[in-house]
Length: 463
Image 1 (cartoon, rainbow, N blue to C red):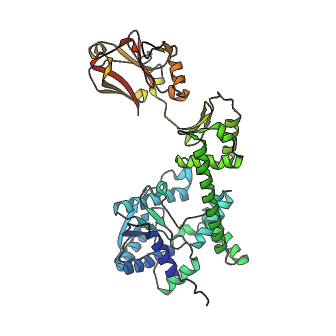
Image 2 (image 1 turned 180 degrees about the vertical axis):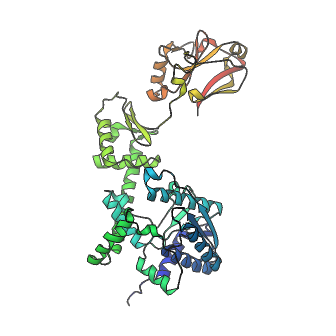
């Protein structure tokens, strides 16, 4: 018996049911632009919500880029009112459009607005109208950009996309992904669904429009049904990406030493596995994906440097450093004013007195100095009488941590504690008129430390 081909409605219902199976979802929303695709989505979602007792919302984003934008918003509001669907809109202004391009800036702002609307209305599932033709365009665009398996995977049927939506609890589903544009056109005509036309979709200056109006028709003419085959290729790429992620997780677990990667273990991997591991590591830390050329250059420098080399490679989002044969990813931090020797009338450091405070903030040094009660520490009366100075190390400072231990250079203590050089440069010291009293990251000099009730210990907290 020949199996019946699924209808548009059954495909949609199955996809939404699968997304709802995550559990605990009572409210869903449609991202409604008013165009043909999202208008079809709205009507399908309305029928599903009515049949299954689910609360439905529709959210519209007003970009303000078109003179027709106000009319589109009014159209969407009217369509929702006619169907009895709760409607909300958000007006946005594009940021960094000159830097990233109008298309990318609009996309980023649109999804952030949709994520915010969902949070405001306690919606846990957002439906978008991406379809099979959109998937084909996405795969082709990624291919033209030279993307790897992750890029060629195209769009997922459902994902969280917390960084894009700025809403960690929101699931975004694309229930029309298996459906062609022709099927949607037929559905809209059959149900006499009113929709608007966004003239920006006709502008060939945008990459996706150029593909849609020139390349895709040519492909359709010579390779009918290519969209479905592109979708299958995307599914294969998704499978390959999952396998690569599993391998990367295993390799990362095997090479990690705390928060850092053991270079000697990284060397044991093939180049391809090293690239895969490092890309995954960047992703887990929330940093953008490095290009293959950048990754190759970085890996060469890391592996060829001497054991004691303190290598620094700059990534757009962070610094990649090597210290004692360990690979570190460190955030890019702003320079601290306390590093400027001319900051305080040509005097290094900042003079201060302690008047019994539990903490003192020193923004120029990037942190807070805490004064905590302890059985072993400075006599509070003695400490109040001192003229104190906080500054970054100037070289030559020495510290004695305990009576039975030798006086050592602060640099030696940092090395013994395995504190990398770039962290030492942001750790201040506290001095009296004659002596070094405290070094952040190490501790207090024992010369003025005594035992007894009410003593005070110093502790530095970077902020």
